[in-house]
Length: 368
Ligand code: NAD
Image 1 (cartoon, rainbow, N blue to C red):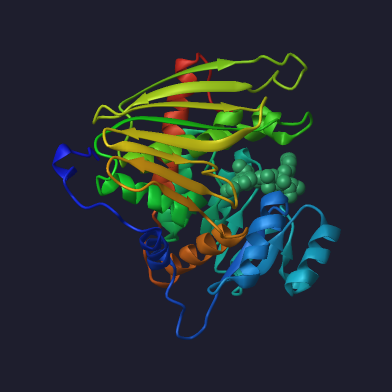
Image 2 (cartoon, rainbow, N blue to C red):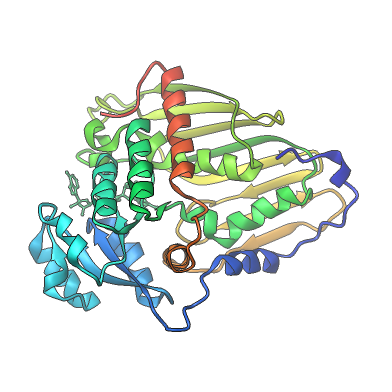
């Protein structure tokens, strides 16, 4: 969306309370019946065990009812903690049997990226809704197949873009949409961390690419939701600096620029070679908005300096796993109320296409 100059004169002092209300408005109406969406957790790794599953303990409309794991011992132990009966523990081999389990409404897919498509499609074929981690897949073709499978089965598909549902990012969007910053000219964003040798994220077959697919995607997605526009042009550069064997299959660094139809230019960086405190800065004709951290699990912090207004300084006090509670319950509301998720398969696909274009401009390709 182009922010035009006609917005300049408006009184723009929207409070952060408004953003919390916005986030609240997206939260599900708790079912009168008290029913919760039964999630089957596919992959018991860090994001599942440390964030999504703990979130389900306090969620209003979500609960863990089944597990899929290659490690029976780990699954049994986790099942005990979550009150999941042994009969609801599946392996990757008998995963299709979830079709016969009425406790399971939806699956949460938290596997390495290249496995997302297969486990989404198998879930849809089993008649289950799918909440799938980002990036949605490792190719545009797989992403399209996921969307088609869920459509054919009449099941919801949501990509787990948690930042699209939390108050600080919603507040940033609001300050841009209501014209507070004037005409948006430029965005800078970065997100990265130091990746250790031996991680699947460095394996091209499992990850599909390097930091762009894993954490650069936050900057890419943010530039799109902040502007409300789709980039008309992207161009990137990839590099490897650390020749220590970690980056023989995926890139270490990607820098890319995007031009949006309104003329906004965004410059982004991502890396597996340095810790970047995921952030964005939005430069408008009337002020500057700086969110840092912008993509972390907690401690998000929004600041803005707007001409003629008191400085805005809004630290987010929510603690992890609040973002995951919101995400899980939002998806539950989509299922219960038959609503299309905001971050549906098509939304995930847009990022996949853009990442493919960025790699192409670096003379690389995405995927295995
Ligand atoms: P992880 O390595 O901690 O967990 C991956 C899980 O997949 C493990 O349980 C592992 O046993 C299982 N697995 C099955 N087959 C495997 C194989 N062939 N190789 C490796 N593991 C295999 O990874 P993670 O950090 O939990 O990431 C999982 C997914 O979640 C990724 O797609 C990632 O991008 C996404 N993620 C999202 C967020 C977020 O904030 N939304 C944060 C971290 C990760």
